[in-house]
Image (cartoon, rainbow, N blue to C red; front, side, top):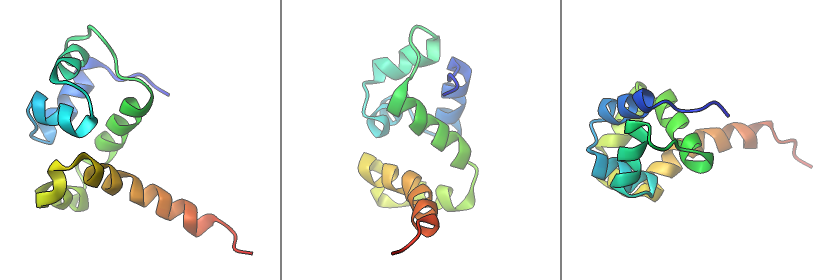
Length: 98
């Protein structure tokens, strides 16, 4: 997986109009972790890196913008489902049936 630069993390957060605290909530980390990612003192990895990559890919799409306006968007599970559902939908449609 490619690394995520501090500038990219900040760009994603600001494009989605989240404070560091709100961004941390949807990523299941503390705001200090987001602050450390944005300052370059630490870097996201594994699950958090993948979520950031998915957010970056989808943040400019109309459907995802609508998702962010949904009252349930503050729930990290709802947001994660919205990010992953298209990926699983593609996998299910490509899986051969017996």
